[in-house]
Length: 399
Ligand SMILES: [Mg+2]
Image 1 (cartoon, rainbow, N blue to C red):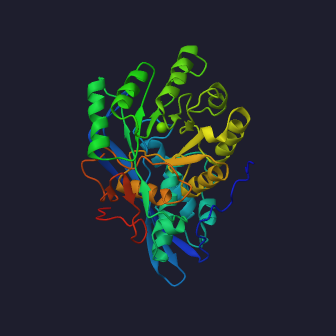
Image 2: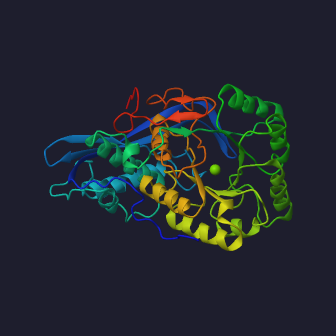
Image 3: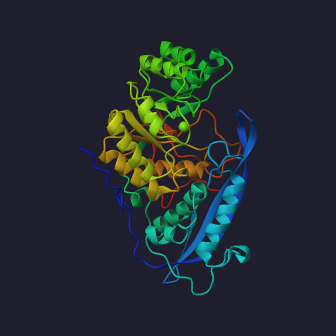
């Protein structure tokens, strides 16, 4: 039985007290990476992280300052957004929140600007902006942080999260040789004791690499991420994907085009391994469409969604996706986007919801950044403790 009605409130806290936005600013940090990020078009040794910071004032005059994070890449490689587009979009969002024209906006609220209450009234101020999900997610994060402070609770409580710990896996990139690659896998499995391994694959660097992992670790939870590297209408690519059924993988993530849902559902219906969608799910409507397509062509048990709050425009949308998936027997997990400690912590608060039932990309084999803006959440033996401090519960914040 399917339940395709999109939940309006996926079990989140509703704030009824009027809050006046006083000031909106963006702290931009250029962060040096410990290991440069390699792509097909270039190499990055640092990334810009943008932190929207918003002051909210209650009717009693108390001020709560909330902070969120926008974690774009430096070029439109993962999606169309990059640090340049996020900065432009934040200009429009800030203008919508302060009530000042975008070219005259100094981040200080205009006189007579109407207050916000619940998350819907907050998002309503900037929902006219099409797309720019990474920018919107950072701004929404600032709202939740402030509301949590106002109520003296961790953000996970506002999200309806009940788990004290969340399962944490890691993502392992390809290397030039299988030996080098296996060193990273061994470090993750034996050194870090992660709850599961996600490995990147592409045609020609798939079966041989997976075989090496399975030979050494026949039992470990293993999933693969293809980042749209396969052509779902090329018989040789389909044959390679079909062969992956022999390796007891938890899922094959986004093998086809980064904007496709339908071809994934039809062309791969013959596989027994579940298909996970990442890049092609930008909101809860896409999620409903995916569930309908899997119902028609195979089975919703063979659909998995990787929810990255920055990819889907924030936490409200992420929670709607998680609940809709759970109502239809679809598993979900939380992916990472090279977030700083703040963004990583926010993902852990989101993952404390019971519907997020598979291990997320919460730990990396080495810290992403030479100097982070705070301490990462506490990780031990495949689990991360959900911070219990007020707001995000960040330790040692240098923002
Ligand atoms: Mg992915």
